[in-house]
Structure formats: structure tokens, C-alpha cells
Amino acid sequence: MTDTDAGPAPSLADARERDAADPLRAYRDHFSVPEDERYMDGNSLGLAPDTALATLDRVVDEWKRLAIRGWEAADPDWFHYGEHLGDLLAPLVGARESEVVVANSTTVNIHTLIGTFLDTLPGTPAGPDPTADPPAVLVNDLDFPTDHYAVRAQFRQRGIDPDEGLVGVESRDGRTIDEADIEAALRERDDIGIVFMPSVLYRSGQLLDIDRISAAAHEHGALAGFDCAHSLGVVDHDLRNAGAGGVDDGTADGAALGTGADFAVWCSYKYLNAGPGATAGLYVHERHHGTTPALAGWWGNDKSTQFEMRHTYDQADTAGAWQIGTVPMLSSAPIEGATELIREAGIDAVREKSLALTDLLIDLVEDRLGDDFSVGTPREHTRRGGHVAIEHPEGYRLSEALRDRGVIVDFRPPNVVRVCPAPLYTRYEDVWRVVETIEAIVESDAHREYEPRDGGVT
Ligand SMILES: *Cc1c(COP(=O)(O)O)cnc(C)c1O
Picture 1 (cartoon, protein in one colour):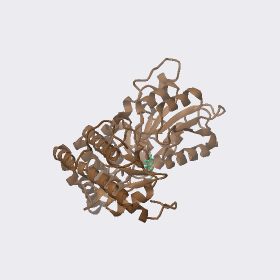
Picture 2 (cartoon, protein in one colour; picture 1 turned 90 degrees about the horizontal axis):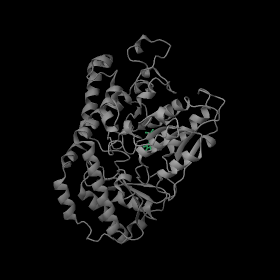
Picture 3 (cartoon, protein in one colour; picture 1 turned 60 degrees about the horizontal axis):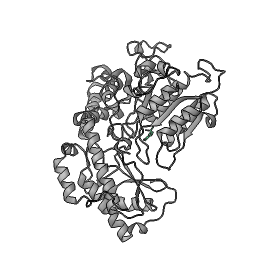
Picture 4 (cartoon, protein in one colour; picture 1 turned 90 degrees about the vertical axis):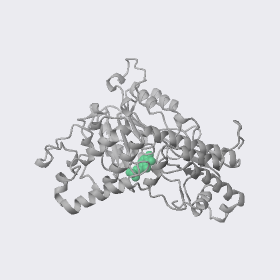
């Protein structure tokens, strides 16, 4: 690929200079970074920070010392721990403390929130007008699969054909989703009740415009929900103000919906670094507090009456209502220390370094690798998440060869090698070395020694 903006490719010395000047460089020492490896998979599973291990150790110790008393006597107490973690996360999503809670898994949270909001719409059995035509949920063709599985299941449970209800915005290039196509779908169809989009596409790394999508949804009387699994902890969010720039022409229901994304979900084991399968999180705008959760459980009860053990559900008047069962303390405790680290570093500084790292990666791929390579991730900062999709016809064999050489990346069909320089523990030098390793592999044809992919899990 030829470089049009001239200038030589950044050198190893340049990369080292940037590391020396990096205001976040000391954060790497908090992480268990594998020796002799370039770990580039922090968008799938973040490395372990010592701060997360410390809060986990504390809870284990509380369990030993306090046993059942931990629900009240631990500090912070376990009973309100999901809410407590929600308070810590609220600034990272740009929400009020009462709007955020840590609970369940991402997939379960999609089930309960899509179900909850379907039940508020005309055309669903529990909705205001069950005889109306069923509503549609607008998603896209490049979504993470679990999002579609969950939305489809929620339609089936309401007796609505998921092939009718689930509407996917098509990609024009197989990599990205154009927000204009989301707007067009909203204009063309009057049955869209919920727009449910990812913040960042898991394969190409495109960052979608949450603000613009929220405004468009609200202008057309649809709710706006987001899956922020691939952005939380690396991209700053302002969910409460999303859509503020939207035009309200006074003709749609948008005025009633007002500003702010309606709901969001995310997981804690990617850029939040809280460990494999760590408890997920969710946001529900306060205008929806009091709406009945689709998957109700005693942990979503008002905390002041929960232990009266009544058989009538007295739901919390916060996002806490969308908790279901007992907070999984051991899968939640690492979130406390991991989140504090990101808050201390500052999400704006984290984002700035992330963009600088991915800029360097993209520059090096374009300058040093051949025409077989292309970058599937948008160049514009406003459209880029935290990882880069490097496309190559032999992407699978390349990713295998990289792993054998200590460069931990992953492959996503058909041809994408995802490379994630997570900003809290990745150095500019690491990025430079990754591209050097790719170059060495293709120059020696070393990847051809690996079996082509036959459909297995990578
Ligand atoms: C990682 C990811 C998930 C994972 O969901 P789990 O329930 O934690 O397995 C869901 N959606 C998106 C967009 C993701 O990137």
C-alpha cells in the first residue's frame, strides 16, 4: 500500500521516544503482562490489573472472616454491591449513579432490557395496544451474534415472528454501518420501536455515532439502546446527553422521549479488565425507572423491603430494578479495582492514548506491509474504537503464526486479524514490534506452514 502523506514510516526509535513521553506509561506495571509476549487481545479479555486482584482478595477475605455477615458488615457491604459498582461506572458511561448497575451477563441484560421495552410498545401482548401491528427492533448485519439471538428470543416469547420483528441495517462495504442507513430505515418504516446498535462493531472496530443514532431514533418515536461491550473502558461515553443535538420538529413522539440514550449494556472483561466472565453492567435512563423488568427477580426489589420476603415484587426505583438474582460477588469484586484504575488514569487520557496507538498501527501497516493487506477500521478518530482490523486473504494462518511468535491476536472470519493495543498496558514499541513480526512472517512465507482454517474456533 502506498503512503500518500509522505514521510518515512515511524522507526523503532520514534516508538520508544513516545513511550518515554507517555503520561500513562506507569500503568503497565499494574498489569500481569505476559513475559516475551505482545498481548493484543484486550478487546476480548483484558489483562489482570493488581488493583482488581486486590479487591477480589478483599472479598475472599471478607467471606472467610465474616461469612453471612458480609452482606451487611463487609466494606462496601455486599448487599448493595451491584449499586456501588454502578456508582463507580456511572462517570465512564456519562450517566447518573441511579442509572447504572452491575448485574447479570451482557446477553442476559439484552434479554431483560429488550423484553422490558418491547412490553411498553403497541403490538406486544403486554403493551398498550396488543391488537396493533407488532413493533420492529432495528439492528445491523454486522452485529455480534448474541445480540440477535437474544432479540429474536424475546420476539418469540411474545408470539411475534422474529423474522418479521428483527430488521437489520445492511452494510455497504461489509465492514461498517453508515448512520445514514439507520436514519433511512427509520424514515422508511413506521414500525420501528427500538433501535439497538453496538457502540463499536466487534469485527471492524468502527465506532458508531451514539449521539446521532439516539437523536434519529427519538425523532421517529423509537427508543435508543446500545451494546457498549466493545467500548466501555476505552471510549468515553455521554449516554445521558446522547441525542441532545437532534432536531425536534414537534411532530414526532421524540419530544416525550427527550434527550439521552434509553438503555445500554456492556461487559466487564474486555477493556474494563475485570476478568473472564466478570459480571456485566447496564444503564437505564431515569425516565424509564419504574417500568417493569421483563426478567424480574428479588435482587431488583427495593432494597429496603427485599428482606420482608413478600410475594409481591416491589421494584427498586433505579436501574437496580434490572438486577435479577444475588450479585455474584467473586465475579464482581475485580470490577471495583479495575474501574478505579481507569478512573484514576482518566478516560479521556485513555482514549487519547488508544487513538495514538491505533494511529501508529494503521500507519505502520500501510507503510510497511504489502498490497495484500488492508485496514478495515475507519481512519477518522470519531469513527474508530480501540482495536484495528487488519485484513489479509490468509488472515487465519497469519494469526496462528503470530500467536506462535508471541503476538497474541485473534482472527474473525472471513479475513480479519484483530489487533488491540489496549492503552493501559501496551507500549508504542509493542505496536511497532507487532508490525515487524507480521512483515517477517509474510516475507518468509512462514504462515504457509500452518493448516488453512477448517471452521474451528480460534
Ligand atoms: C463481547 C460481547 C458480548 C458478550 O456477551 P456475554 O453475554 O458476555 O457473553 C455481547 N455483545 C457484544 C457486542 C460483545 O462485543
